[in-house]
Image (tube, rainbow, N blue to C red; front, side, top):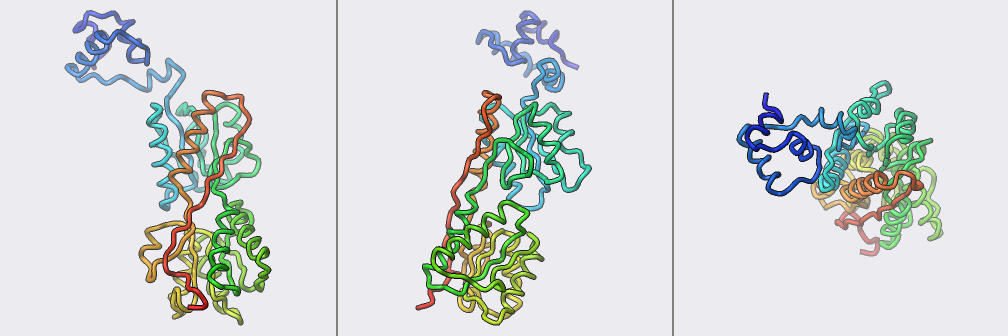
Length: 329
């Protein structure tokens, strides 16, 4: 195995100089070139783990997610990794789909310098403990008891944006396929949607404003109940990607035509929107930006660990399709 001593024999430099270079210190340019030329000749690769143990720093940030089951989570990883890479940090990904996974302890054992997380509810307490020692930035939703830096979509604004679009197209009998109130994002999107209808003096029947499990099956079942209402809505907003997909399945099964019999505003996932006929109108959250802002917050926290927690809110984006008809067309 090649060691610093082998590089010393080729370069004539001291072990202290070689060690300083590989531990991030500044050495003369001529010495740097000599060390790297010798390393290339010897096919030398520094032992990063050993170096981290000596320095007490891993130059690694943990990204903790409930699962890796959809594009949202994968985009979070890509966005965080891109932003952190520019700062010389790498990413270690862990998932925690169920209690007892020990994902937070695993990341801590790998000496991560901070954690960016879509917080699994069952890991909130462990994340709170970790936050007393390293920076933790939560995104997507607010976990109870986790008082850390956070980056969220303006979910109230996202719900209001969908309602305003439908109102502007002349719709007054409007439905909602929402998620459970226990999840802050679902609660806020529904609240923003309802508030915008209230401002317009519209109060839909309770049968048209429904919540269900935040899954494809939940969206399908909820949409089926809405379409079976005595006064079927002319338009519906679905408050998450999975709920949108489930609602589209229910609409297709019903024989009703998207954008003709029922207008629909979905949430997130441009690829899904482009696959429907007509193309689906969606309220999109800029996930890559959310992840990048989380990385920026974490880097700021590493530089100023005593600062008060910061909340960053990112604006939603309306991506227009042709799934919302004007009632006077």
